[in-house]
Amino acid sequence: MYVCSCFGVTEAQVQRHVDDGACTPRQVASACKAGTDCGSCVRRIQALLGRGASSRRDLAGRGEPALTGFEDTAAAAA
Image 1: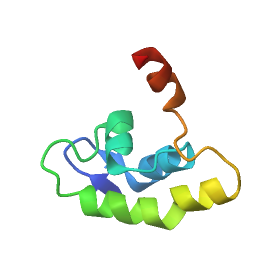
Image 2: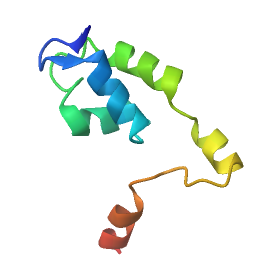
Image 3: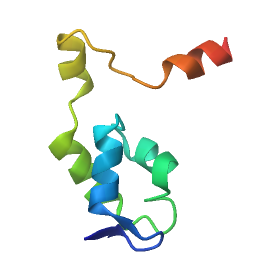
């Protein structure tokens, strides 16, 4: 099923990005452009994030990095 008709992004594609660590609509958008044109799919993306992603609090509670993928960005900015 299509989530983003503007860019032809499917639910399965969004779920793969979530499984790979995306935890915000902005991170999904940077991976596949979904949600960056008309915005009508953003609520569906948010629902997919809530369904399959661990919250930052859950990750931190398990001792896992809560902001994966940002370590390189922070180091580059310093």
